[in-house]
Image 1 (spheres, rainbow, N blue to C red):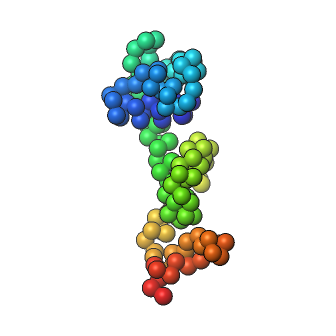
Image 2: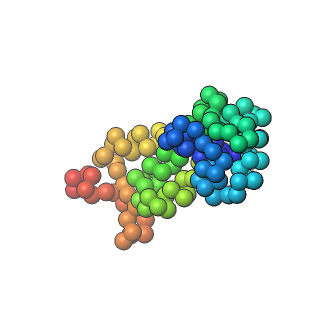
Length: 142
């Protein structure tokens, strides 16, 4: 259900509201699957939905969608900036993992990224030549 909330949020941010066809295209499923999910989200009061009408998030839905996007951003930053994974591969992995990230792991990743980005002297990067992590010489001045 989170992927539907995220899709509605992204579409609503661009267009002001979403339609079933927009969501189906975004998520990559058929309209019947979207309609079923929207009924469920509407019952949970996470979206404003009526058949053949526009779809918007409720304040509770916005809160959950925003949290999902935060988790994605943290994972994507970790994968690209720390692990050196390409943005294309990072995107797919972050999208898959954002829904399964515990609060404890999320908090620790945020703390690690904050430390990593503010302590250049201890910066390390994935080194393909070594097949492992090494100190980023460009960042240490050596």
